[in-house]
Image: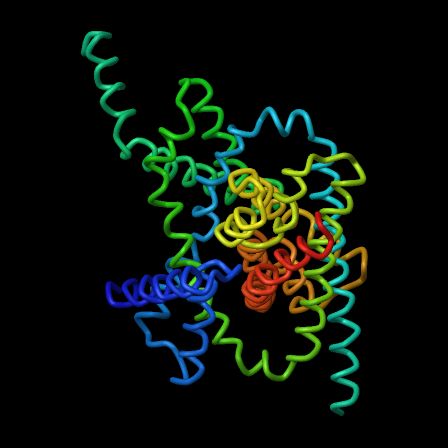
Length: 117
Length: 242
């Protein structure tokens, strides 16, 4: 587990260094994720300890959002002033994104299935 | 029974150490999770929402500044980095399905990602949101550490983005099943992919409770959209000048 956690942090560190070095718009952990994905694809899979550690971290993924969420108290004033545009944008855009993604995927997956038969 | 003066000393000591912020975060989440379970995993009893509400109330009542709390809670927050890297593992487990459905998935990803970014900014502008709020809204559909990084890069407010991301996640988790039902989408893989794209880890946590397949596709969409949004938002910010 210690080895797996070290591996995740090493990939994050490499990602951060690449992002800084080339002034990339992509955050370091995402580059780390892409690189780990590439390495796993080349090696043909993750070891059992790595899979267990990833599952442990991702199982409580929603806990990790709590400290940032409490930051809402810093913005109560702005949210009070702009609650309508912020709420309309969140609600409208989230429903639209779910609907567009689901409809496009359903239409194309159906076509792929039909042509595959 | 210690005297009140001693209690005050203990409070002063504890509130200056990271232990308290870290412990109340875990306690609030455990309590929220218990309520969520007790409510039969009803989407409205979202554990992130409950835990955040309880902690804000506690900090306001005790007059504790957010920074003091975050000095402790940052140890939990820090794990978002390695957790993001760890997403490569479930993503890789989906490789065969990913290959088979590559083109439909990538097309839906591009359409959904653009819809999420452009509509967030357009609706916000339509209702008169400020410039800083618009820039903070643009990356709202992707997971917190990535969205905060994007907001920082384009001149938004990272801490406001974090709040908007979490609100989006909670709203997506609460509404996804309803939206899919209205559209007549019955395939768990399709609805899972859509909820992961629109509402990242909080939507994915919810999708895993619906079915294993919904969760896997949700995690896939969350990872892919994190990459794509990190590329698209800075480009769109320049081109559309939002």
